Structure formats: structure tokens, C-alpha cells
Image (cartoon, rainbow, N blue to C red):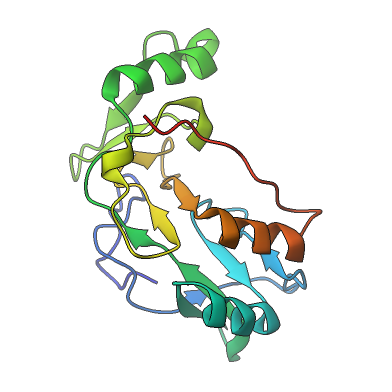
Length: 185
């Protein structure tokens, strides 16, 4: 997915843009039309049928999803465009993280990795802090935040989908997906 040196071994955060296929291990491969691996909260996969539909209708890039020994599966990964400018004002993130984690974490809102120095906020959802509208510059219908979230080796980015793509994913997987409104400031 990110190559041999594409991950920080200290915090689990990617250092580079994705360059290879997503490799899914395990004996039971999801059969849903749209799904998210439970260990990668910024990865969205779609069936071959849905992939063909959304590439014709939306501005998205798709990547391969492989099994370790069998190679390509026909399932595709929706590759979000990485944005550059921070999405969330730091003071709003501090407030959101403390509201979510303050009971157990006190004043801690995140941490810097001792190896790479990257800051990761403790996890919050996209809708828990306002998003700066000017930071959402992309022609893609799905974008990823530059901020990292997580704790320990867990690391993910926030994702935003333009409403028509989000609605198509919800229609394909109503049991697994829902639209969540975010505040754009």
C-alpha cells in the first residue's frame, strides 16, 4: 500500500501517498457492495459492480485490492485526494478532543511521534469540529485531511465525500453506511 519505507514504525502514520494495492488478509473476504476494513478507517472499498458505476459518474481514482497469495480480487479501493491545508482550527480540535476523551485522557489531546515527529490528534469524527471551507480544495469527489488521528500505532485521516457520491455509497450499502453532516466554516 505504501511500500517498505512508506510507514513510520513508531506511530503507524503513512509518510507518502499510497503507491500500491491494498492487500487484505483473512479467510473471509467481505461481500458487501461498499465496506471499510476495520483496521483502516480512511480506506473505503467497493465491489467491482459498484466501482464500474461510480467511475462513470464521479471524479474518483480507484486502486486494486489484493489477497496475499491470489492477487487482484476485482474489488476496488476508492483513493481519496490528499488535501494540503489543515481542515480543523487547532482550538476547535482541542475542544472536540477534550469533549470526547477528557474523562479518560485529561488535558491530553494527542501526541507527537518520537521517531517522525508527526502530530496525531486523539480520534474524533469529522463532524465533531468545524471544517475550514477554504482547505477543501480538490476536483476529486472524495478527499482526505492532512491531519492524522489515532493513538499508538493506529493512524487515520478524516474523509469527506461530495454528497452525490456519498448518497450513491449509502444506496449501495444502507446497512453499513450513513450520511453525516459536517459544519463547514
